[in-house]
Image 1 (cartoon, rainbow, N blue to C red):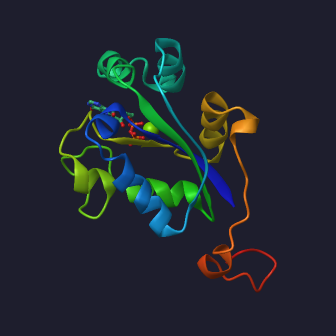
Image 2 (image 1 turned 120 degrees about the vertical axis):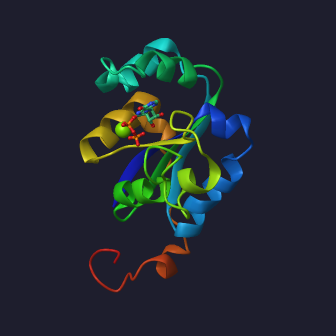
Length: 156
Ligand code: IDP
Ligand code: MG
């Protein structure tokens, strides 16, 4: 089981797309174990996008991410990191595949609706950046016996 950090970016919140995007994760069978609305500070944005500091789009990325509230979510499931990245689609809305979140809801390369952690190490770091341990609320779901094959040692 993995937990990944998802951010519904300011454009997703402003365009009223959060419900439909969250539904996709629920429909997939992934579990939401943390969720809140917040305004990202300059410091938080700089921390989160530190790897892109030297890129030409860095300043506009930080001003975009701090311009309006976002929804941050902790999303859990078997292989959740890769599944969420696949559901998000390619970085640029202009070439993301139809059927993906970025492919279906946007055309912009910078206003691309959603962030998702790109690996186990970044997921751990990013979850700690946005959530305290108490804000991650683990919960049993009755439906998991139908989302997963539970007959073995691990959910399959
Ligand atoms: P990712 O979000 O798919 O992981 P990254 O390459 O990590 O993509 O870039 C982080 C964010 O920076 C993107 O989601 C997008 O908002 C923005 N971005 C990346 N490349 C460009 C670009 O070439 N022009 C404008 N914005 C970009
Ligand atoms: Mg990235």
